[in-house]
Image (cartoon, rainbow, N blue to C red):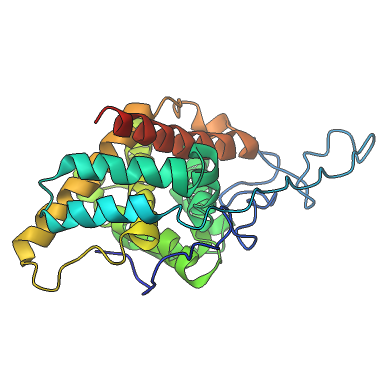
Length: 293
């Protein structure tokens, strides 16, 4: 199902947002160049005040202790959905709603739990910004990836995996990488044959697909690890997974409100903000949809 890494899921004592899930770094996104929009100094600033009037970094917010059984309802409903072969869509809606509401205490915390999947999404948009603004070949040469020049779209994007996907915990990093590779495998669906003729609309489709795959992978790891019957048939498993993926992708598409038509001119912070708002809006909509059951 594309979710590598075996796990029992997070324990009841795991923090809402684990300490090892750091905020995305302030380093320039991959694909940017000297003097271009979004370029930052090595310390992550834009150099506009040369260090004047600097303020101390804010202290991290104190997290409330997690509830011991905060994943229980989500896991119970997810198991019910999976064992129905995908027919109990009400259980799916409740499972995801309870994951957001009880498991993470809201869309913002659910977004922070995405970890490397957030930085991967930003990195991908950073590279696409370079493609649209400077061309594919110039961007690849700036990334010291001359070996990818002239390759097919799929081979090129697979070759960018280590550049786009950031390190993280074993499971966290696997979620980001697997979601990226699943997205690349769907290029035909987006009508992409030549990255030199990439359009803003296609970038939006790739981006939404990536976010969808990442959310599905997060759900599998956090609440879906015990949801399968050993006796389930292949058609049952395929139906269940198809229903889950369609449901999540629909939420991402329906909640997506960002405009990527000006991507070549966006700064790094604007891209990071788009990534976070996309995840947060999707999680929040999934919570709201669960209440409609």
